[in-house]
Structures are given as structure tokens and as C-alpha cells.
Image (tube, rainbow, N blue to C red):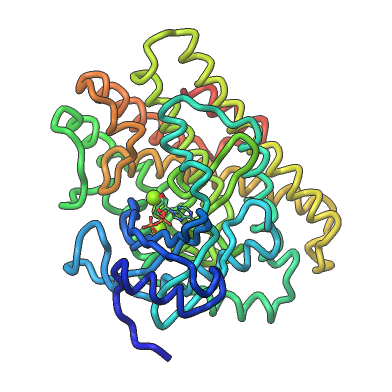
Length: 399
Ligand code: ADP
Ligand code: MG
Ligand code: MG
Ligand code: MG
């Protein structure tokens, strides 16, 4: 058992070489750290023939802040284990784990360098026809097969224990549900947005809705979530989709993952108002974004119901129409969580390049006003959406 040490290029290379698993014994290996995420190190190790693997290692602190923000190394164990669990039920759309070492807090992954991170692609108005369907499939299968509909109660409870992730959940609890709704040093927004932020922070009806969502996040153990399904955690190309980076994974409310995805699509929708000046082009992109949201909601629902119909193990959960009721509730929750994603990405600590990358300050501010109001309205009205049609109609009425 090796004690933890943070790797540099040389150590990462040597670690992979001594495994004797991925490259020929005399291969000429090179290694380069290229992570652009907030939290971890990401190395690519390549041989002279272009074969590559990715080594991701957690640091005992958050990379973007430094040692003043200590963070558990256990997140690497969680991330690798969630990828394996999700991969077991949705192999096609989950990044493949090739090796893991929880003492060194590292995971070796297949190299997805031939694909691109979704956020950058959407920012350039590139569209992916299979993405909606594939993400719906990922979200439905991973959430169904780790729910009580499928797992036996004892099995489920053991997994809930394996996947408690208190430190990373605490980040979400603070950043999604607390900071944006009160004065906090971590909040980050331009001064001209101040009056809108104050209005939001004084809206008591909104506070109750956010408290309900937070309570759900804290106490619901519906299924094994990814926990961070934003457009930076999804690799895409013209054919396929691969989900990465589930270090925030835990047993939580299913609507949280679905809502994070929808929220990121809506952030990009708003950002396109400033990114694309030609109206027909902008309309085309925004139509793609909304159509994809609709497809995700519809196909998530259909896949979940079909899985429930075929595989529900618990007789009492097979009550007529209960699965339908359950999935409608997930959609409702998802709209609320999507709203919290819009709000926290606008005025909280961590923003998105979709919006912050807009160069013109006035145009950016207008987008921020839109994402803030859209987020607030989604949170306020999510509970009125009683099924997939009314959920989509609510989104359409607000954008
Ligand atoms: P963090 O947890 O720090 O956000 P990520 O898992 O999101 O780390 O990875 C950061 C970056 O590293 C990604 O945006 C991507 O560019 C690259 N990366 C991560 N995993 C892979 C992979 N399997 N193949 C290729 N590049 C990857
Ligand atoms: Mg990431
Ligand atoms: Mg990233
Ligand atoms: Mg991460």
C-alpha cells in the first residue's frame, strides 16, 4: 500500500509504466498534465504510436483555490466507483475506468481526447443530434438500476453507506442552496446586478422553494447520482457521448442530475442571445437547445417507465401508475434544481464560460439578468409542472 504523494509528470509516467498493463515494455512514454478542471490533476501518458491513457489524481485540496481549501482525497475513490457502477448499467455513455488506486487517490481512464468537452462545443454553436437521447439513456438507466425499484433493500442500504460523500455534498449544499440566497463572501456578480440580487435574496416565497430543494438534496437517497452533470462533465462527438467526473456522486434525488443538465442547456440558451448576432443562426441554435431539453425529458421518462415496467423488483412499487407518479415527481424536482443551477452560476462562486466568456460587458449583463430571472421563475413554478408536457411548456413560457 503506497502512501499518498501528489504526482508530477515524471511520477505519473513511472506509475503507469510500472503497471505493465497499458503499453509495450520498451515503449517510449511521455506525460503531460493538462487538467483544466477546478479540483484535480489530469495527466495524459502516451507512447510513440499515439496510444494514450489518462491518469486523474485528486489533490488534498481544491486545485483552483490551493491548500487553503482542504478537500478529501476520498473523492477519487468515489469517482472511480461511481464510474464503475454507472458503467455497469450504461457502458456506452460512461467513461471507462482502466485502473484505480484509492491510497494514491488516482484513476486511470480511457483517453477521450478524440472527443470534445460539451461546453466549449455549445459555446461555438456546434450541435450533437445524438446527445439528448444518449444523456436521457444515461440518466434513466443509472438512476433506475441503483434505485429501490431495482435494488433489494439491504443491497441499497449498503451502497448508500459506501457512497456517502459528505465533504463534496457540503460544497453543493453551500454553493447551490445557501450562498446565492444571502450575503456571502463567495458570491460573485457584477455591481449593476446588485439590485436584482437583493430582490432575489428578499423573496421569501423563493426561500421556501429553495429550502425544499435543499431538504430533498440532503435527505433523499433515491439513487446513485453523478452529482455534477454540467456541460464540462460530458465529452461529445458527432456519434457519441461519454460522461466523466462524478466525484460529487452520492445517493440523492434523481431530479438533481437531470436538473443540472437542463440548467446548463438553459444557461447556454440565454448566452446565445449575446453570442450569435445573426437572428436565423441564433434561432437555429436555441431551437436545438430547447429540442434537446424536450427530448431529454421525454426519453428519460419513457426509458424510466419501460425499465420500471420490466425490472421493478419490489411488488409494492409495482402499484398501478406508481412509476408514472414517481417519474413525474422527478421531472418536477429537476426543474427546481435546474433553476438553482441557473441562479448559482450567475451570482455564486463558480460561473460558466457560456456566460462569462461573452466579451461585451453590456451584452453579458443582459444575459446575466436573463439567467437570474429564468432561474428564479423555474424555482418558483417548478411544482406546477405535473408531467413531461407541462414541464416543457413551463420552460418554453419562461425563456
Ligand atoms: P475536475 O474534477 O478537476 O473538473 P475533470 O474530470 O473534469 O476534472 O477533467 C478535467 C479535464 O481533463 C477535462 O475538461 C478534460 O479536458 C480532461 N479529461 C478528463 N478526463 C479525460 C479523459 N478520460 N480523456 C481525455 N481528457 C480528459
Ligand atoms: Mg470537471
Ligand atoms: Mg473540466
Ligand atoms: Mg470534478
